[in-house]
Image 1 (cartoon, rainbow, N blue to C red):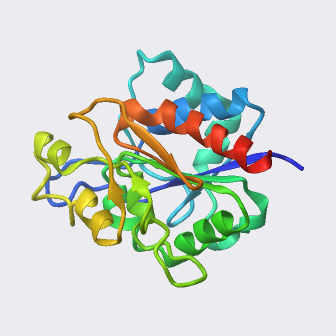
Image 2 (tube, rainbow, N blue to C red):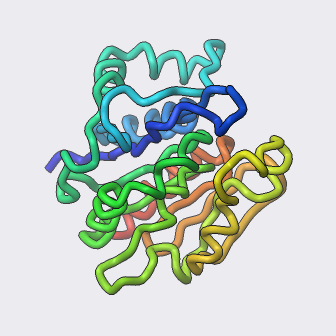
Image 3 (tube, helix red, strand yellow):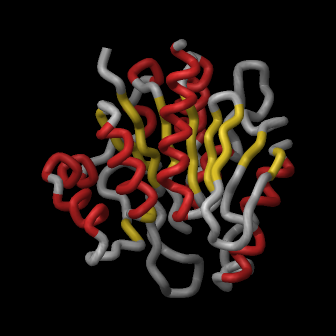
Amino acid sequence: MTKKVLFALTSHGHLGDTGRKTGFYIPEVAYPAAVFRKAGYDLDFVSVQGGAPPQDGFDPGDQVQADFLADPDIETALSATAAPGDLTAADYDVIFYAGGHGAMWDLAESEVLAELAAGIYEQGGVVAAVCHGPAGLVNVRLGDGSYLVDGKQVSTFTNEEEAAVGLTEVVPYLLESKLAERGAKITKAGNFAAHAVADQRLVTGQNPASAVRVAELVLEQLAAASS
């Protein structure tokens, strides 16, 4: 069976009423994608609305990012991502929610995407998210009605980091606080330091610097689950 990772991306391109653009944060996909590909995993992409999701954070001087976007298969995939209702949980080993501030406006609102993530998890797969990507976890409920994050260690973009980038009053909610309301046991490092945690096939990271470690922990969780 083909080993597959599904990257879940925001479709939201406007940073509140600031007049600034946002989208999914390219480094938070490019770096984990390189880790997964090296480990033999195929990549698929889904976005809340399907189609071509808005992008943010591209550094043309970063070779990993440049190579990622220049790959013709990636370019084709990102130009026409699937919508959540087009996909089946049984086809995937992992769902990986990428961040970017756009995630704060739509990832938590997609019931179909949340159901897809729950399906992947409950068949023994791994659910992962980095930075603002854990917004996608806010409303993921398991078959018993409990929130996926309830009682588990979770790392996410922190309230302090949101304040440091001056967007506390712009985002629709504070992600760290919202996840704590869902029962998550928040674990964090200092502002913008790399930090990631794995807990019962849920893998989360605090910020862009944590993206590679999240991917590495996903692979460790998959190996443990199959042993």
